[in-house]
Image (cartoon, rainbow, N blue to C red):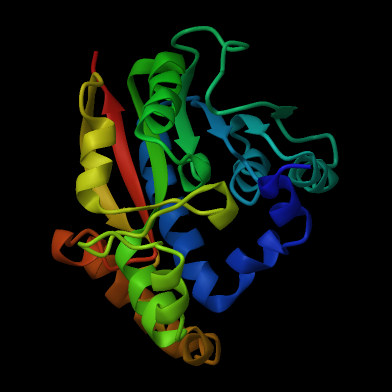
Length: 261
């Protein structure tokens, strides 16, 4: 069993996005997914790295035609358990680095909302994006999620009191970029890293969005918010989540790309 499989076999990924602080990321991501879908009369959707189907299943239940690809069998089993057979969704096991089962220009909207978290080289990240570009129609959209570097330094290294550990194990560069290998599970990036991944592809960035903003910085307080306060927070969040001076401080970001015609 791989480190990634072991991690997701033992983690309640579903409840991460169901918590109130996790809802910020989910609601924000869905907002931008729907913006992209609205450009097409009957869009076809591919989610690569669909996890337990939080997005794919929700979209299929809304009536969208969805193909979900997931590497980890446990996640795929959870995804399929949510279906009653009426949803227009196909769920298959597969790898973001090789989507050869799909023809070129097959989908209107392609989503990579997890794979970049677990790809540790620029070459692999570019390969995953290359495959997404290949299977997306000209004029279609690609949405790519990333985990960001600075929140981890602030929250895990300093607030979590792990500074001595990460220094002893040489997990930080001189300019405070976290080093990641498969045993760390997650790969962390900065906005300039995302720009480098995008470079050279026939795509234009539409938006780079802070999907959870400051929600992870005070999760316990956030999860205790009443409904009215949470609604006001979401108003604030949607008003500021596209501000580029704030994007790098968000735990998660969403890179919204359009494939050139």
